[in-house]
Image (cartoon, rainbow, N blue to C red; front, side, top):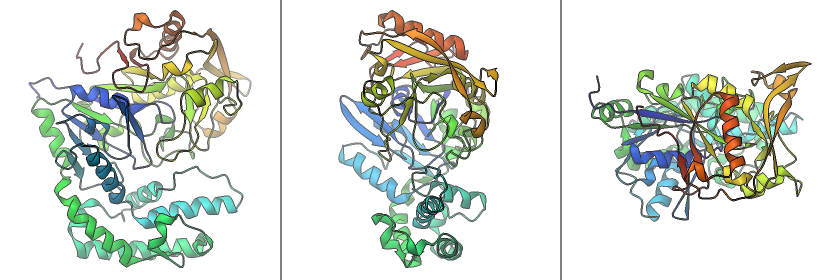
Amino acid sequence: MNANKARNVVVVGTQWGDEGKGKLVDWLTESAQGVVRFQGGHNAGHTLVINGQKTALHLIPSGIMRPGVKCFIGNGVVLSVGKLFEEIAGLEKAGVQVRNRLRISEACPLILPVHQALDVAREAAREQGGQQKIGTTGKGIGPTYEDKIARRALRVQDLKHPERFAAKLRDLLALHNHVLVEVLGSRTFEFPEALKPYIVNGEVQFDAVYNEAMEQAQALKPMIADVSRELHETYNAGGNLLFEGAQGTLLDVDHGTYPYVTSSNCVAGNASAGAGVGPGMLHYVLGITKAYCTRVGSGPFPTELDWEKEGTPGYHMSTIGAEKGVTTGRARRCGWFDAALLKRSAQINGLSGLCITKLDVLDGLTELQLCVGYELDGETIDILPLGADDIERCKPIYETMPGWTDTTVGVTDYAQLPANARRYLDRIQEVTGVPIAMVSTSPDRDHTILLHNPYSAV
């Protein structure tokens, strides 16, 4: 039993990702002694703005910006060691201490150049064959998770054993190079510049991958850890933990808009499996949601607007919200807030509370639409269906609400928000059944309204 009454919080995205989780993780880290990333890879991106300075993170937990806090990459994450060191170098250049605070699970599967080659080649083959692309980031995330499930992945722990690593790598390349050349026709593709040093005549070369991995292993070894054990030790010593999810609930491989999803479980329950702690150690689930909706890549989006047409609400969201992906730079599709979608997210995650982000982006819109359900094949439903095909046929049912012209930027007191902004937030709570715990009124760390502290036991 933990006599110190430590509490642990899970932060998850409730839409299609890009909800602003990074800022909130950074903000909540003030009350935490350890921050854990539990799924995904460097296909995720979190942007933090602290004292006007912007920092983009892709693998390292957002808590790294708080001095003295330990950061953990759990076993549920697929790891590109090269990208990790790029990120470390950028943080160190900015004066952030990383290596003595970052702990990496030795059970993390490794993303290798062959995984990225497969990812790129598959999307190219789909396009050439006239099929709709999945919309992956092309970073090798999906193929690495496939190897994990097939029990052939190379893991961080293999880097400590060069002969074992070499043997497993040879087997892996034999399999994947056959698929690249014979099935996908990789010899006809133009691969990204970053991949070209590894590829000859469509095949990924053993020596290039192995030599690089062995070089990286030496620098990585001091950070390799038994993350599960260290998390338990921190918690049992009275330390609060913060579990940081990537992507969003509707991109979850089981519960999202399949097949237009990521390759991991993004929901709160995976914080347990992806970090190596029991579900009883997860005390509060904070769902992050934009005050409107966005989506990157392909897939159904019931409340999508014409976000490319000047003078429209969608264009306002796109431009004022600077809606471009942190990792890819791709434009995000924009639409009205979908409360029926959020009901599904609340159900899947067991949300304790909501944090509404980017409320300030809606400043200046005179009228808002709030989706409270859908018409599907002549019936009215009040929760997002499970299948992508059904979601494609959903016609949103909107409630019209008045907007506001006063600015909400930087407001830190709920009572100081414009009356119509408060009515909008109150209606979101009513329709979804989830209380709002926090509201973000700009990307800046300090521009946050706190209604209930997730670390409070009350």
